[in-house]
Amino acid sequence: MPKITIDGKTVECRENIPVLRAALEAGFEVPHYCYHPGLSVVASCRLCLMQMKMPHPKTKELDWAPKLFPSCQTPVKDGMEVKFDSQLVHNNTNHVMEYYLINHPLDCPVCDKAGECYLQDYTEDYGPATSRMVEEKNKNPKKDIGSQTLLYQDRCVLCTRCVRFTQEVAGTSELTVINRGNRGEIDVFPGEPLENPLQANVVDICPVGALLDKNFLFQQRVWLLKPTKSVSPADARGSTVYIDVNDDRVWRIRPRFNEKVNEWWISDESRFSWQHVHSPDRLNIPMIREESALRPTRWPVVQEQIRAQLNTVASDGGSRVAIVLSPMMSCEEAWLLASFVRQSAPQATFVIGYVPVEGTDQTFPKGFVISAEKCPNRRGVETVIEQAGGPSASWDEFLTKAGGGEYRFALVTGGYPKAWIDSTLADTLRKIETVVLHDVWASALDDHLWLQLPSATWVEREGSFMNADGLVQPFDRALKPLDGVVGDGQFYYELAGHQGLFRSRKVRELMAAELPTFGEVFVPREEPEYAH
Ligand code: SF4
Ligand code: FES
Image (cartoon, rainbow, N blue to C red; front, side, top):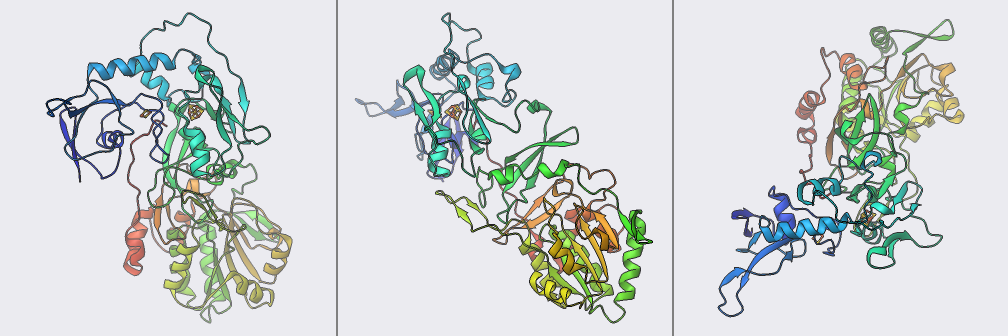
């Protein structure tokens, strides 16, 4: 590993990275706008300039060169010596910041980016306290550039990150720079809006408040938001995300760097995968059928009833019992439910629930993938079913047998982001005498259910998902469950005979004894902030 000296301190760094990245990874603060590790290097913003020792042209001895070098464009080399903390560098940063503020509006009080804006931060840290600009500022129009995205051109610093993102990562090239000099603007081509499945990433990488998410516009001040580390449930890739919450509400989802899965990006599907969480249509009261109608009951009663019912219908070992484990469940929830059922019904059939698939996988130029499989944990649930042993069936096999009247009792789990049981499916499930449905939504099957149990969304749960490549990744709980709802993990934990609070880490330790795959979860490394 090369060793370089930054401001007199020797730093060991990774091979083939620019000095800027090495400095940021070593904890130095270096202002920068145009550099982003996921994009090509253009060295246009001139904020990251540094001093560097070079051989003197006459004496050939190493000495500080009189001009500055862009640290984002200079690769590390063993033995090199650079300086960011010098008067020459500070003067450059100060003058560059003054330049950026010439036309920038002072509208931080109404700007969504305030609080996480690198123009605000760098101005405070490196910029001049007052402006010498006496002319009228250029005023540029706000532009509606895409279905999710707005451009406030006045605020743009022309770093071109957004342009390079659409060219290099999305591969769609909708954005470009028009005009020249201080009239330069970001724009879309006529009649070609910013419309690609990764479009809202440009909002994250814009270092200032020029690109804004329409869904988040004027919704919250960012310093009020509390981030929680999670994993996207939108597809089988398992992109890692932050869920930003305030006042018991999710306000936005942002990408969380993951070197093995999604790097710095997420799909718009993942970004907006939380919107059903606050739907007024969600179930929130456990119901039991009494005298031909569903009536409210209590969670402890539900548990007693399920145990008693299972003991009755599984007196022969459970050959006419089916347990549908949804690919929306966490690995821990699936394992707890499977362990509980195997004790009283060793012959029960475990079924991998409905796996929604849309089209085919979409692969983007730099390798980002949106999976066609729209659920986060098919592989995890399949692994649990395999390990549990005993009879198992695919979703289609289960439907055929259910339609043929082979089951007397079924516990079906759902948890999909929208209602999924249509009348055809409901008609098939009606052939099962006793059905328990643990789900987020009411359905066409309600008139037949024995128990209707409200499920928590993944935002309100903790656990782990195994992605399509077999990577087990943990996610934390961002919100407490909706009033009246018990977290799915807690419910299955108690059903399986455990006492106390469900903690996914504790359950994974128990699982690891039977399933070493779950002994170690993958947690991505922390990346420095790249001005976004
Ligand atoms: S809109 Fe944002 S990301 Fe795009 S060039 Fe301007 S400042 Fe950079
Ligand atoms: S010139 Fe280096 S980050 Fe812009």
